[in-house]
Length: 128
Length: 361
Image (cartoon, rainbow over all chains, first blue to last red; front, side, top):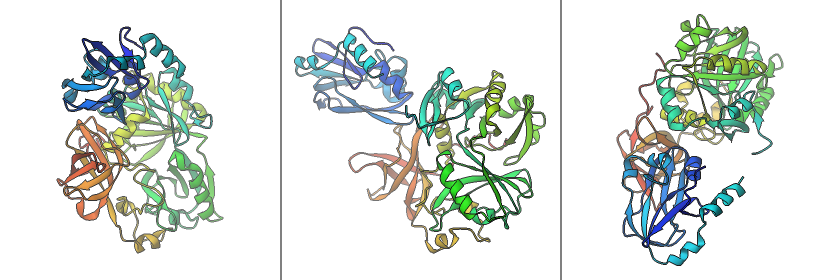
């Protein structure tokens, strides 16, 4: 299971990478593996205001739909439109081309509610 | 993992091959080996092998009418030629579907009935209760394994192992041998592709599985894609489109029912005009309907419920099967699926969704 070292993680298996107040987010390798082939991503509208850990995206695989939660609160400023036609990018490159949304972070202190790569690795081990 | 799950003879083989295992109908079964989309592609274009040993097999000996079998199942069986099989169902006294099943005629008074895995116990109890004293009944489910070889290349693969298999026509079967083991092989399946169901002794199943997989053209496949394939064909799955509260007329089983004979549940079925009807629809996007979603008409009225839904790799869109009020089933009509807050658009479709299968090739 691949874990990107410099990213932060949620217990719901979202990752986030924060640079200059902008949080780029997606789902972890563990999550994409568990979901299987992603067939549809219901993206939020840009400009939507979201709270940390609020459901704001839905990812569908062949057999199920899963809620995805905002790892940081703020305004959605960009969504990955490539996922509309090629949702499989999430399976192929979940930490890169399979990113889902960018959020203009409201309160950087919320990052203390997230796990480091090391903590996430331990968290995944605790699930087994 | 639940410890109470039954294992097929191949459970450890699936794990060794890297399958993701899942509980299904009380059985520990492979969901997928590779990915559902990759396995879909392989089945529709080449040939896949499924372990279906979880399904139930009952052996019945007796004259069709005199032993009571004819009264238990809704389909015509008295005129079936030996070595053919026929799809149908059995009903309770209230006209609800106890199970859908296939009757195989092995001899003039020698029958095999194949039922769903989750229903083996209740089905066996129903047969024991309603067969006459002169019938011989055996639940052979745990002695009989079943492998499904499905896909346009299935005949090419099987004819190397089983000389004469090319002669088998749709819904016919015969007694053959694979590597010296007697097998009953029928030209049937649940995928919409040319294919065979191979019934073999439980203890020989591993050997036969390996014999077939030794052909590099064949790949093992899980139940995940099996469900996608059957929804693309609009085939019913017990517990979704069929159950003990659903009338067979509502479920679209009317064409399998023999209207000229007496069978258990017949009076109740006739006395209850269908209130709704099974239908299918295609999402206008990649968003897929899911079992339990509501169905709405163009005006937003609640007109039914989704029984099965999936993403269709063939259509590159979501597809659904569900019960709808009878007037709303016109193909091409606009419907919506989802809930009151979140509705997605769909178009009523004609069954099956997938029309290019090699089924009758």
